[in-house]
Structure formats: C-alpha cells, structure tokens
Image (cartoon, helix red, strand yellow):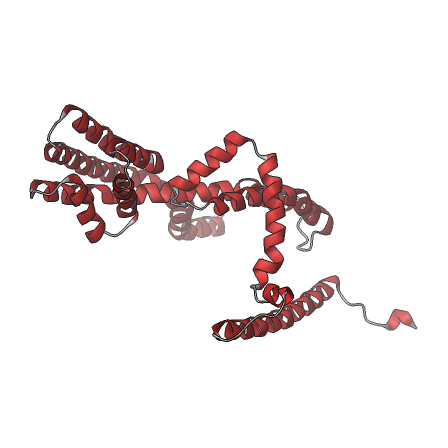
Length: 313
C-alpha cells in the first residue's frame, strides 16, 4: 500500500525547506520594517515623550537591540584572547587605513574570533551535512576556502584598505607638492600653504594635512605633527618629505627650495613607477594568453589538420 506512494527527492525537500525559511524571514523583516518606520515617525514628533524605559529601548533600531549585545560579548572575548602587541598592531593598521574609531578595532577583533570559532562548524557543514553533494577534491577545496575566509578574511580586507589608501596618497602626492611649492614661492607660509592645499585638493592626503594643521594650531610643534603624519601614512614618499621638512626646520634651510626638490624627486619617482609597471605588463599578459588564448588558437589552426589526418589514417 505504502510502496506505491511516490518518494520525494532529498533535493526537493531542501528546496522546500529553503523556501519556507525565506518566506518566514520575509514576513519577519516586513514586520520589522513597518515598526522601524513607525518608530522613525515617532522620533520626528517634537511633543512625543517616552513614558517608560521599555518604550525607550524599543525606539532603538533592531540591530542595536539584537546584534549589539552579541557583538559586545565577542568584543570582550576577542580582547582577552588576542595579545596586547597584536591589538596594538591592529590599531596601527586601522590608523593607516584612515579608520580612527576605537569601536572599529574592537569589531575587527570580534570578527576574527567569530571567524576562528566558525571554522569547526564550517567543516561539519561541509563534510557531514554536505548539502551540495560535493566529493573528493571539490569537497576539500570548498572546506579549505571557508576556513581560509574565516581565518584570514578580516586581516586581508584590512590590509587591502591600507594598501589602497597608501597608493592613493602616493599618486596624489606629486600634484600636492607642486601646489605647496607654488604657494610657498608666492609668499605664503608653510601652514598657509597647507590650508590652500586642503581647500583646493580634496582627498585622503588633504585630510592628513588638515590633521597636521590642526595639531600645529592646537600647540604641537611642526616636527611632532609631521612625525605623526609619517606614522599614520607610512609610505617612502611621506617619510622622505617629513625628513626633509624636519631637517629644513632644524638647519634653517629655505622651505621653498626643499619643497621644490621634493616635488621634482616625487614626480620623477612616479614616472619611474609608471614605466616599471609598463615593463611588467607583457610578462603579466603571458599568463592569460597561455591559458586562454593559445588553446583556442591551437584548436582553430590545428583542429582541421588533425581531423584530416585522422580520416586519412
């Protein structure tokens, strides 16, 4: 009697379960969005007063009420697990990436803890549950990719942000140096020239110069402000610029002459860097040519000959 009933494949059950979960999540998110819209409307009312603490808590966004306590727990746990030297190095990398918030550092440490904790669950999901039905090397590659993302994903993303910011500063530094030279040779002081750069050249380097100018206006010496700039950016061009400016202040050398020498040197270095990348381009093009273009070319050129040879034999 029961043997005549059709059997439902496992894949269909998984798809149906996924659709059910998606519908439930859609309903929950729609309800949360309606409540968020109602709360935002209530916040805009000037005469609205919250009567008790419970209503004050409900006015907060959902991610603050649900995810913030969990992230706070992982943050405390991550701060205890990571050594102080590593925490300081992470803080320095955030500064070099242009992130000056202490909360972002704590969240990064929490993400690292979550990544390492999720590795055993990912391995169990890959080898025990295995919803995709992977086998052999594909299953090992899938598991290794997940472990790699959990282990070094946050660090690689932070390093990429640092590298991108340093490259952006290196590309814009020669133009900024030219504007500094023109401003100083026109009769402005170094601080006034920095102010002119901040007003006319938007970007990350202008933000760093604005911070240098703010530190000098707050009472810090020019040498200390420039050394702090070197610590925040940490590129060879900025180190050379800071060293030249500190020596000019120490020995009383003309700032305009030093800036012009630095501008010429940085422009020559940028041209040499562009030429170096142009020389590396043919070597880098060999890899896609060998892997993608040459096989197709061999098929088109040698394919008919191989077919004729096989027919004649």
